[in-house]
Image (cartoon, rainbow, N blue to C red; front, side, top):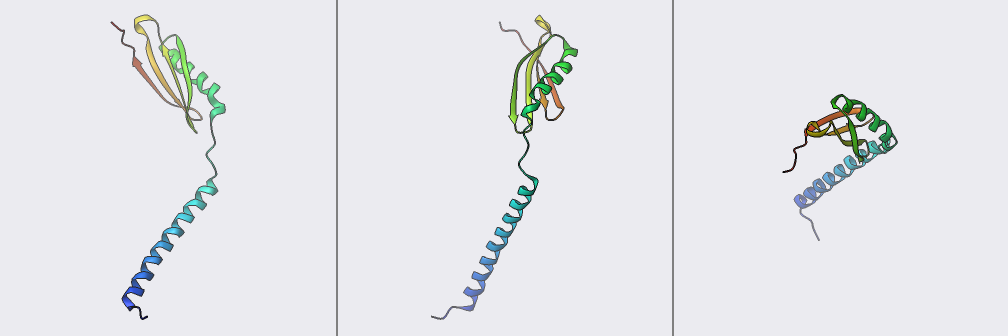
Length: 110
């Protein structure tokens, strides 16, 4: 059986693209392995709570509702500040330090 030279050439090009893709994939995996697995900051939850409470205190009395490990490196603290009609909810983001703080008004139910 005789193969057409064009078929042989096209097969070779297709395989070389596949090999190149495998090489890129292997290089990406090696780089990720060298970086290591991301470290969890779960042990920082008490520190996150304290930092967020301290920051929120400038808006009034603080009540923390929840501290959640949102991702490997992000802790979110939720709570309220203030009293009565002046009460607001807050969300505080924490990595290895406080990275964000949002206040939202709490509208009374009718």
